[in-house]
Amino acid sequence: MPTMRDMEIARLLGWYRIPLRTAPKVVAVDYLAFYQPSAFAERGGQIEFIAQVRGHELTTRGELLRDEKDHPRAKEEYYKIQLGGLEKLQEPIKTDKWKRLTFLYSTGEYLHNAKTLNDLVIDGEERLLLWKNLRERAENEQLYKTDLPETDIPPEILMALLGIKGF
Picture 1 (cartoon, rainbow, N blue to C red):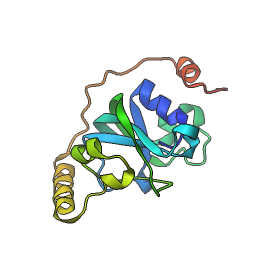
Picture 2 (cartoon, rainbow, N blue to C red):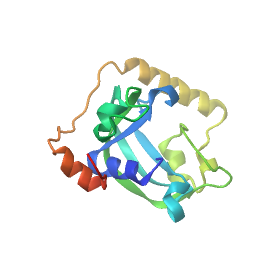
Picture 3 (cartoon, rainbow, N blue to C red):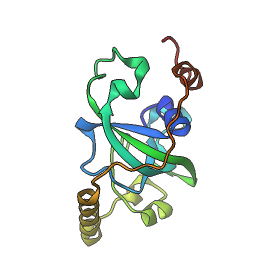
Picture 4 (cartoon, rainbow, N blue to C red):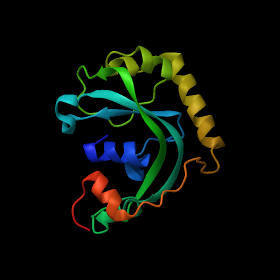
């Protein structure tokens, strides 16, 4: 989760963006856990929130962030990951040595038992089984599905909610 603005978009609008050029091989997962970098100040260097993944689609950054039509990457493809509500972990998962994290596959069991990011790493045969299951899931994901309603919130209200200035 690069910025607080991205966290607010996930919380209020129910989606998260991932650039296609840096996306993990499989985005059809059950949950995302959001690592908060140093941009989150004293709340940085940890995973504090997770959200259920309800679907995904491919779009452009310009379509996702309509107030940034002139952004240098506005025409680049991004995954729009539809999310359920953000769920706060009982105890945040802290970083030990890691300062930056992009993507890491793990399991719910590992997530619920983890104290540090290192505790999320899966090795050996269990890792091979996880990859096999992820590949099978990706092959079976044929259609974009979501049960989220379409929102008809005017752009100026969304911008005000997200603290975005200018139009």
